[in-house]
Amino acid sequence: MPRMAKTSSAKKARRVEARRRIFNLRRAKAMRDAVKELTKSNNAALLPKAQKAIDKALKRGIIKKNTAARMKSRLAKRVAAK
Image (cartoon, rainbow, N blue to C red):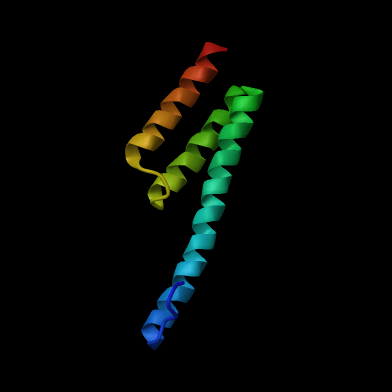
C-alpha cells in the first residue's frame, strides 16, 4: 500500500505528478491515434500529422529517440509502398 505524502512539498509533488501524467497520457493517445489513422487509411497526406505527433511525444519524453525514428521510418516506408 503506497504511503501518503507527509510534507507539503511531497503533497505538491504528488499533485504535479498527477497533472503531468494526464498530459502525458493525452499525448501518447494522440500519437497512437494518429499512427493508427495513417495505418488504416494509408493516406500519404496523414503522414506529416503522424510524424508531428511522434515528435511531440519524443520531445516530452513519452517515447525514446530511436523508438520515434523507427516509428517514423516504418510509417514512411509503408506509405511509399502503396
